[in-house]
Image 1: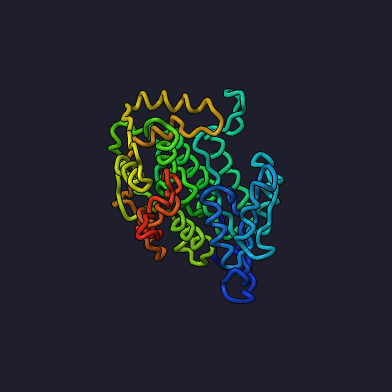
Image 2: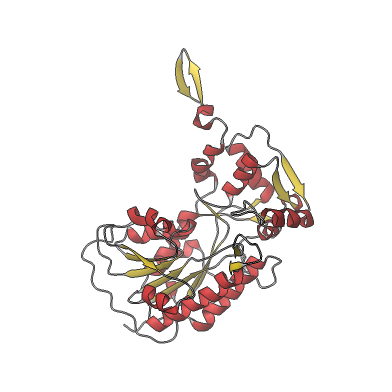
Length: 363
């Protein structure tokens, strides 16, 4: 009862006793509001929470198609869709009211525009800063126990990437209104629906050449989506202030790669027939990215290509916590990567089959 909420002194909400073990059909007694739950990372976080018997409130915009893929990820009654708008304070209040935990996964790597390009719906700064601050303020007002804000390890006020600068500003805005918020900063995330390994595979599949910027010399340290989701769930459900109160976590995988090595790994995994690469300068990459941005749902954008010239690896001298502080072993990229990249093979699984004495055998 004495733990502080979001660093401003509210009393911790009483969580009722579990009706059973922390399993899918159990009752954890925890109610969590997960913003951005129907995105790439969100579905894994909801699955982790759902498997402990936690009630997940899913604020959504649009229609039921946005969130209904989350239905199997928790037991009956533990997925609670809630219509909301980030610009409507009443809907934010309704989404967070009564929750013990608030997790903010909302993010966008480019401005959301209408069919007329100069009309913006939400800019990067709206999404990463203003919406994040509004959620944090509402969480403090509602007296939540744990507030988890997901940023990025690339966040940096001095970065050439506008997205990275907005992420850094978002962290500051959240901490200003909720000093006890926990900030989780993952590296580049890979997984079945990612925009990392799949990005390069899609470039190989749909473009004449796969783009590398400035020789692909920059380093990255990709982290598996399920490791990040497990970390967020552990932080969100923890009663230990040393785990969640005012902490910052940098989450990265076990291995460092250059972007050229990432592309070579993708080529090898998809059995690329013509593994051609276009090595472009940052200036040319900027022009290519801006051209792609003229189309709806672009494969690339200028800021993403800009980030391919910046190292995004753990700072060994930083005092931030890591995956091992949560007793999570980082998963190597090679192990799960094949499971979702094979679909880009021109022959699919049949490339691994040959005939021996008239019978199909796997290589």
